[in-house]
Each structure stands twice: as structure tokens, then as C-alpha cells.
Length: 258
Image: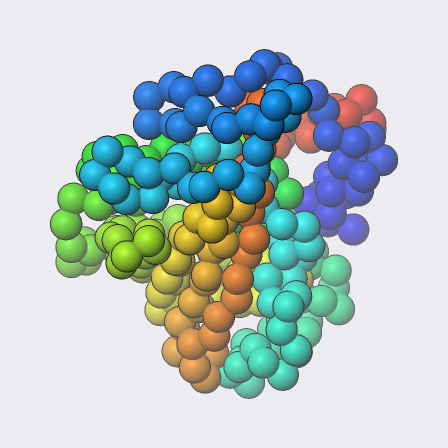
């Protein structure tokens, strides 16, 4: 079993540890809307989605990804709906057969895009005037999505997170990301990606407490055509990000992992 899988198992055994400010009411910090509440004080997650001063949906806040997608980003699809190139399907099967022993995240490397959206740890979105910043609890990583109209770099240095630019299409915040290295996996099962990968994410806040990310995977070297998945998110009210030190994950829950 790889280190990431062991850590997930530890969550099941020990339960999620309490964030430092658990149950402290989330107040309206700059660019983060206050939480609407029902008469008994509970967060009203079905309230209307908030808007920014310019009328755009405000996607700021602490969000918890839906369960199960980190293992298999395509869990809502039939296996035949993932259009692998022959070499990519063979590599995927080899990774499954060897229990993902070469998973980069087992070496405390970031998951990249879209994998960091899938993990069972929350992330905080900060919607700013010229960029959107995502703070991922996992591996204490972050991501900048520029909304100031800049183009992609002409000759980018390949990275794990790539280079992201965003714009609005109606109520959807559309993010395009390119410039990846060829080392990333799309999920724990080992769906491959190459440096040709382009990821398009459409963030759609349905109400105060629920948002979907519609993700398009476009990598002609690994897949015969683009394919799509939808990741549900739930607003994590009255909570905060935890410190995440991957190198110490064997001590994190008071468990010894060998």
C-alpha cells in the first residue's frame, strides 16, 4: 500500500482532527461572504449564492471535495468512457496492478491540476480583483489563477500545477491551465498525463453551500479525445485549514506507519 493510501486509511480509523478554529463562526473577512444562517444558528447552505460588487458570483470560501474522486477521477463514468491511447491504458493498468507504488504524492509531491481538487482535504478559494488564489490544505500548496487578461507564457518551464488563466462566462468561472510537466497523475489509480495536457475547469456555484467543478481533460498524447467529469464541492462552514506536513504523516494521527 502506498503512503497516500495509508494516510487515507488513517483518516478512516482516526477521524478528521479538529481544525484550530472549529466551531468559531466564519465572519465576513475581506472577499469572503458571511455565512447565512437558519433561525437556530446553523449554516444555511441552500441560501442563494453570494455576489461580488460587480455582480459576479463569489466563489470564495472553504470548500470540501466530494468523496471518492481522488481514487478515480472518472468514478461517475463507465470504464470505456475514458478514451485512452493504447500506451496510456497499458500504463494505467500497470499502475493499478502494482498498487500505485510509483505515485508521486507518496513522495510528498503536489498532486497538480486537477488532482489537487479531488483530494479529501479542504481548500480555500480567495477571489481577488485580478486573480483567484486557491490554498490547498494538501501538501500546504497554493495556486494562482490570473484574471487580468494576460496570455499564457510563450515558452513556460513545465511545472506540476501548470499556468492558469481565468475568465467569466455568465455565472461560470472558467479556468484554463497548460504548461504541465509529464510527471503528474490524474488520480490515485494512476491515469496518466503528459506535457500536452490542457485542463479546463468551470466553477459553478449553485447556491451558498454547493459548487460544481466541470473538468475537461484534453491531452492528445494520452487520450484519443477530450473527456469530462464533474466534481461536487460543499462549503465547509465554521472550519479552517489544518497544517499539513506530509513528511510527518506517520506521526500525524499518533500512528506509526512503516
